[in-house]
Image (cartoon, rainbow, N blue to C red; front, side, top):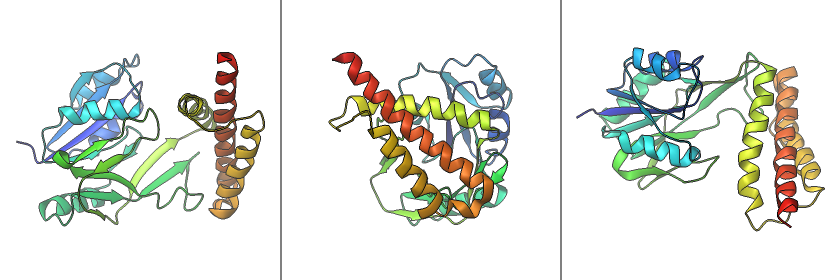
Length: 249
């Protein structure tokens, strides 16, 4: 039985999946769950030797839980297609599971925005629980911003996971639309009060938090652009939710 399984969910990730899987060569099995990609993602994953399964999209949480159900390893590493495991992190992961001191491990994530690795802006160290015992963990069923729930002690690794979510400004705009729509769907059915002013208030608050409180100004022009992008995401999330409620009335 494999000791370490890597799981990845994809949809049109042909530009990323090859390099991602290459960085996971140290894992005993690599599983890709694809949601009807049309760009050759599944073919590339198969060529790289991954175990590939198709599964209709139900949201991030359900999709990752399905991928988890396919894993056979004692330990699971959950990774996104735009993330990479460095040789140093791979060594740290192997050391952690060979001599475990916890049932789950948070990994600091270092993310790039438009070609610059961010050191502030809330993007670093950005610790995420990605390595865990299969039998003691699962993902929440949230459609977006899902998280791992581990039934046991959680420790931290020091080596960062490399993250390349936004290569160009166009990528940021696409992510704003995608994630604000998913977030708005959850917000619209919640009990939270939303008005036409909510988007403006949350947008301004998000910009101030990222650029000032999270020291985004120390990341230069990229920090300013990221703060604006996050503010736009918050604005559109609340406005889409407000409009959805208006249509139901």
